[in-house]
Amino acid sequence: MYVKSLTLKGFKSFASATHLRLEPGITCIVGPNGSGKSNVVDALAWVMGEQGAKSLRGGKMEDVIFAGTAGRAPLGRAEVALTIDNTDGALPIDYTEVTIARTMFRNGGSDYSINGTPCRLLDVQELLSDSGIGREMHVIVGQGQLDTVLRATPEERRGFIEEAAGVLKHRKRKERALRKLETMESNLTRVQDLTGEIR
Ligand code: ATP
Image (cartoon, rainbow, N blue to C red; front, side):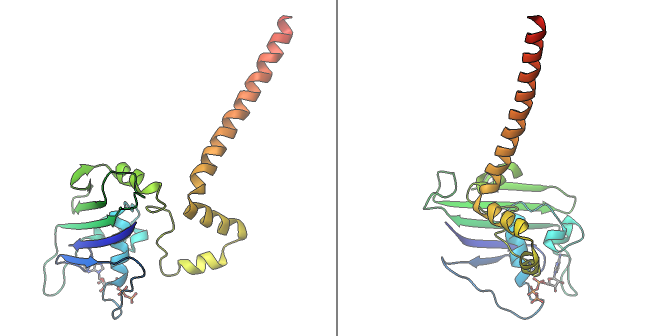
């Protein structure tokens, strides 16, 4: 599985449709300060369902829509499409190529689609969650975040690794199961007390 392409239109500084084709392996994006390198990374997070304006370095969600420049009027919507090569079947869907798209209008709300079929944010999140990518999976490490990781306590660092490895989901399930077990045990004690009283 690898990111095959990313198309941005009306997203932050990318007013015109911009298509980035990527190859397997390492891709470097170079350019002068303020040329939009981080905006590409923001687009990646956004199309995968990012909901926090701050994580996208904005004040409010609609800040992702091209706000206009001296020579170009603002746009009314932002669109990003991410195409993932799925020939190894890492994503649980019967397609060798998967395109996730997100569109947002100024009046709010986002539309999502998977391979052209409209879907919910939850469908996008579920599609990505088992593959270790998607929201809160630490696959996107922003500027300054490395400091946070380097300064983290051993417990916090373990949390990052568990989240990236997909262990966190199982840890949470285990915690839920243990809580249920505890309730069951106290119920059992109560039943035993009552049975004792009846005898
Ligand atoms: P650096 O190397 O300094 O980190 P960068 O290449 O990562 O820079 P970005 O932060 O991606 O640059 O892009 C910043 C540019 O994007 C700024 O010029 C800013 O005005 C522009 N920009 C951000 N949001 C919008 C928007 N909604 N509409 C138009 N332009 C925007």
